[in-house]
Length: 157
Image (cartoon, rainbow, N blue to C red; front, side, top):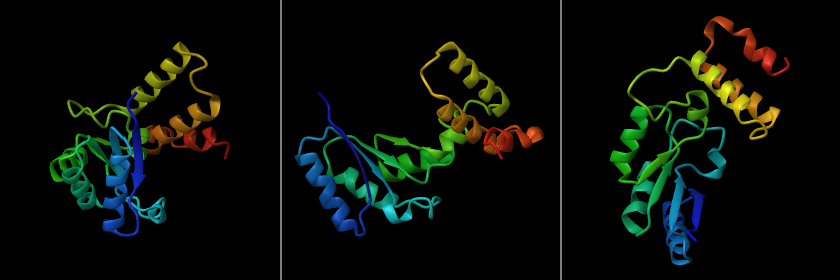
């Protein structure tokens, strides 16, 4: 069975690279590397150290997924080109715009929100109300401009 791991950068690049090597040697078959340290969580969400991710990718023999600093489709492409990684992942950005990996068109967030709610209805029990509210709240961060009060109402404010 494949073993996947996810790490954040440590305070130094040397320590981060050594950790990645040890994880691979322990049997990890795919590594996701977040390009920020734990201390940067929630305080510095725009920058990520793609250079250390690139060094890890060049050093390891297993697939490496880059994480951090991905806000747009263009960021996905730039990160892949810069790091040479096998893929990218994002968290906040995909919650605010679920079609981030599809550059064929610009999607209307109102429609994406309605599509999401239709999937919730179609697959009951897959997500609890807290999760659904959280997702819709994120969608409304950039969508439903003409209904800005919905985001506040959704959060119970």
